[in-house]
Image 1 (spheres, protein in one colour):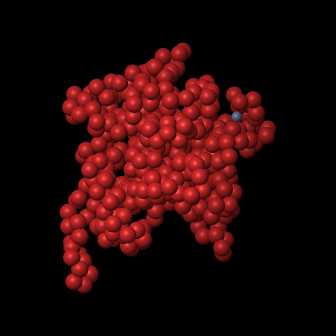
Image 2: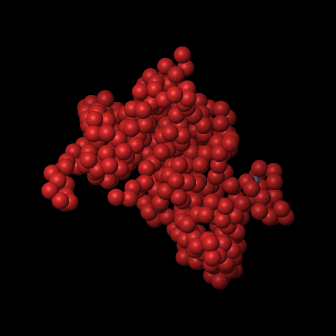
Image 3: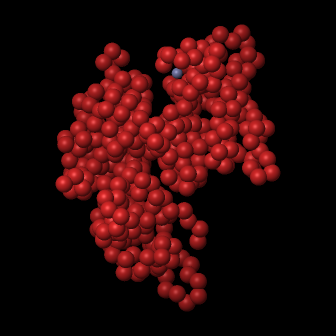
Length: 397
Ligand SMILES: [Zn+2]
C-alpha cells in the first residue's frame, strides 16, 4: 500500500520540551491516522497498523476516541482480504456529524462564508457585500459567522456540531495574527484571538493562496509536491513540499507579486517598477487586452503572460525539482494559449537529463477553492487535538 502521510499539523505545534510527553505522542498518533484517511480513503485498523507501525492497542485507542468524537466512522467491511484473514471494518472520515464554518476574506467587494462538513462540502452559504470606503473589519466577519451559526443551529439543533472556524485571509499570516494585509491595510490584527474569545471554538487563520493549494491537494489533482499559482487581483503562490506547506522565515513564502521582474517596467503601487503583479495580475492583463487592436494582439498579450510566468517560476521549479505546477485564474486569462506558452517555455528552460519535464496545468477547481481549503486546517487541528483553545492556554502557563 502506497500512502503519503501529511504532517502539516506538526508544523503548527511548538514543542515545549525535547522529550515527547504522552499527550504529544497521542496527538501525533491521531494526526497520523486522520491524515491517512483524509479526505476520502478507507482503511481497516489492521491496514492502519501496518502503514503507521503503531501497535494494535494504540490504533484502537486512537480510533475509538475519534469515532466517539465524530471525526471518523465505520464505513463497512473490506471486500477483499488476502489469504484466510478476517475481513476488517473500514474506517473513513465522517462527513455527516460535525460542521465547520469558513470565511473567505480574499475577494474584493464581499466576504463570503459557508457551513461545511469535515470535507469542505458546502451545506450553507452566506455573504456580505462590503462598503468600498470602509472595507472589512472584525465586526463584519463576526456577524457573518453568527448568521451562519444561527442557521446551522436552526437546521441541526445541536450547538456542539460546529468544531471550529476557518478563515482564509490575504497577506502574511502567523499564529492566527494577520501581520500584514495590503488589501485591507491591516497590521498585526489578532483575528484568531478575537474570534476565539467571541465564539469559544478553535479558529484557524490561513493565507488564502495556501487554502486554495490545499483544496487542489485534497479535493483536486495535486500531489504532495506542488507549486501553486493564483492569478487574481494580484498574484500569489504557495508551495507544498512532501505535503508540508512552506511558510518561510517571515511567514511570507509565496508573496511573489512584488518581486521586480522588469526594472524598467510599469510603476507599481508599492513604489517599485515592474513587479510581477504589474505584468501578470488580472487587472493589468485585462487593461492590456482592452488596448489591443485585434484578436491576434489579444492572444499575444496572453501568450506573453504565459511566458512571463514560466520565466518567473523556472528557477523555483529547478531549485525544488517540482514536477507539477498548477495555475488558478480567470478563464479569459488562464486559457490554452497561456498554459501552452508557459509549458513551451518551461520545457526549454528547465528540462534536462536529470530534470524531467515539469507539467504546468490549469486548476480545475471552481470559485469556492479558497473557502473549501479553509476547512482543511480546522479538520486537521481537530483531529490532532493539539490546537484547541484549552491546550494553548495551558501552554502559556
Ligand atoms: Zn510592487
